[in-house]
Image (cartoon, rainbow, N blue to C red):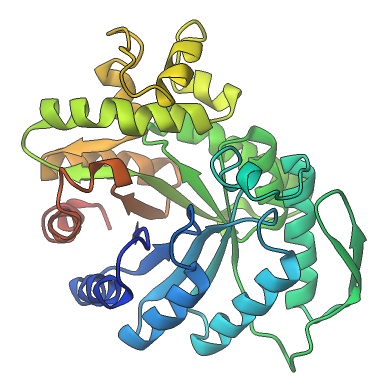
Length: 337
């Protein structure tokens, strides 16, 4: 089991680098920098982090082909992979449609078709091939990277869409499963990944699986669950594919209420809309031994990397660095293997 974390680049880079450098010293394997909102650029941030760390792997997690043309993603990715051989990961996903893509006039296109084409194009570019492709989101006309022997760049796909999990099984090196902390649901997701892998004659065991979920070490579970309920779980539910959302136990009758509440901070959610046991399916929150047991359960079904994150909405409530340190010092030693 590997341990990673996601840190939103919304504050000065020197402080950002301080936290990541500390995390490397504590024993973390990987740090993810999101391509989120209108915050600092993740590729530039990762290049800076390479000056602040020595061995830790670093990833952009995640960017998307709607806001960044695949050739620009490829150029940035091979540059970072060259700077840290074997230690850079490229994370891809859909991006934030309503909050970002629609506000900047980003091109539109069906996600499954677009992300499948993007993974194929990037794979060919990384292999030194010439690429010609045209779709509703991007075009390339006989383009290749003008780089001698481009370095290998692992591609991880972040999604909650069943067909995208299948596409990841067919094309990606890894899968980032967002906001799923329930081993039964994770097992279903791994089945979808396996379907895609088998269709391409791939070994599903060669595909890394990252459980990317809110994780808070605390002795006061009840308070933390209450803190997570609205800003985090409501957002996760809104961004989740319908089939996966229903596997997570979201009642269809409550979804319109949850969706409306995301954009109305004073709206009152019915008590049964997001009950405590549902919060537990989306997040890991509790004392160290409880958190370790939850991680062990995910590892038992096939997760090989944890992606700890602190939702932006809770950064003023819980100290990110303290939580990150407690996870490594008090939780990780109790994780099997």
